[in-house]
Length: 123
Image 1 (tube, rainbow, N blue to C red):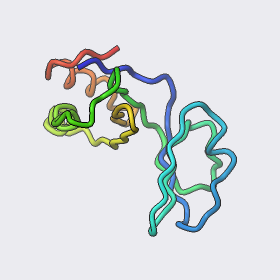
Image 2 (image 1 turned 135 degrees about the vertical axis):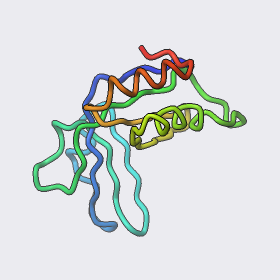
Image 3 (image 1 turned 90 degrees about the vertical axis):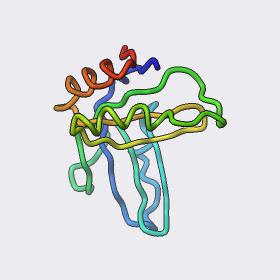
């Protein structure tokens, strides 16, 4: 599988479930928003996140290249398994077209090695 490393350093944020969607969360071309009864979760570039927000900073994202058919199985498993074996925590994000795997920036080199050894191509 071809994985494209996105250029941004990302932050995963947690806001109250009834919080309004902040304008800063929509200020870039890459952002993800999930609202549940328990939280408003945002993934945005590090530079866009105010200092007073509950957040986990310093993530990098691998994007699975191309559009994935909904009938495909095992895509995430093929990515997560080698990272888990290498002891690398991940945060998974799926969109309509594809999947993203986020790893902490300080573990990026290890993640690339693990994914490459598992047969994936990281660009």
